[in-house]
Amino acid sequence: GQKILHHFNYPVDIYETMLYVEGNKYYKQSDAFFHVMVKLGYPWKAACVFWMIPKAIRNWMYDRIALNRYGWSEVVMYF
Image (cartoon, rainbow, N blue to C red; front, side, top):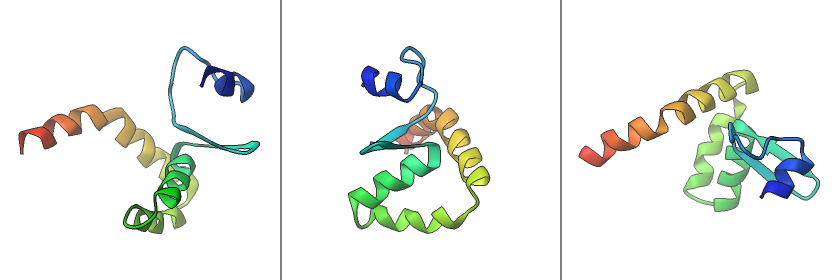
């Protein structure tokens, strides 16, 4: 993993986003998420309907979810 991060000039000690690598291309943030959802198939692929949202808004939403994911998982565990 660290070799891949180094190859694409990402730090290897701080992980601030998700990277998805396919061949010589890489995708980050919401693009990485949607590429993974496509690979997972149905029903996860259905989330790709949100791919039509402009990238700046998608990435903003991705960052908000990523920053709060641990807090939300604690809430879900209580239900």
